[in-house]
Image: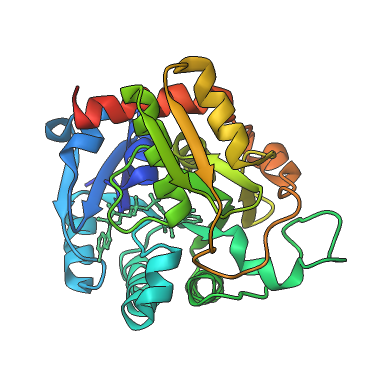
Length: 323
Ligand SMILES: NC(=O)c1ccc[n+]([C@@H]2O[C@H](COP(=O)([O-])OP(=O)(O)OC[C@H]3O[C@@H](n4cnc5c(N)ncnc54)[C@H](O)[C@@H]3O)[C@@H](O)[C@H]2O)c1
């Protein structure tokens, strides 16, 4: 059996659905592996579930991962399934178990099934403790890891596990460090900032007035489609010199800029931002991550800066939610 399949764990989440679409566009064979397959989201981004391999499975179930790899001729893994930041802060044991043991299972499956490359989404928050006032003027991939949250610790830990498994067992482990994601996926376990952006987009679509809690400073926001582009390139590009890449938008955005960008397309909506207490009291980012390594080696450039991303977000959300 050929080994051309690419297993996408968490393949029906925000990044996973777009990644599956992009892999199809490039003539690849994605196989979605997800504990809760979201056909609506996949359909809205143009992935016909009947036309690809789909496995409803849990990454904590190693035999299920191995069976999926064997049955679908998998040669590479894009490992996206995880609990996101605030969920891990709320439920650290479940979060650490899923994010760390889930990664160990993927790495074990890779070693046992001779997978050639595992690609993993880490987070720009792995450095947060190294970036305070007076911190570095340029944030490149060489800055010392200093996670301040349990989530970031699970991402940093997964990076080290991936690197050492890969060295020991002779496969490639490539990590991309994403900026703060946003996009039209279901809101279940998302960060409060992602939820707030989704509430703004929904209000804009409906032409309603909305008062949105926005206690956040500027942040480097990354649209789901660009995140998928970056990680798909990291999965497919041959002969990489480095194994860790920043994937972001390269621009800091404020809540007011999001409201202004939405107003250009949806002038009837009246969105007001309300200050308040931040849910997670970590230092704010000051500058965007340097992306020259991803540009030079992966050919990555963001396509969806705020003004272009928001109408695309709104159109996709409308498809998912109807109306
Ligand atoms: N949101 C951010 O700002 C951010 C930043 C950096 C990195 N990341 C990482 O990017 C990745 C993708 O993020 P996303 O926004 O697409 O997340 P998402 O929540 O939209 O998607 C995650 C998917 O994983 C699936 N999943 C959860 N538990 C599973 C399990 N036990 N087995 C199989 N599937 C399971 C979910 O059903 C969901 O479809 C995650 O690893 C996340 O940690 C996110």
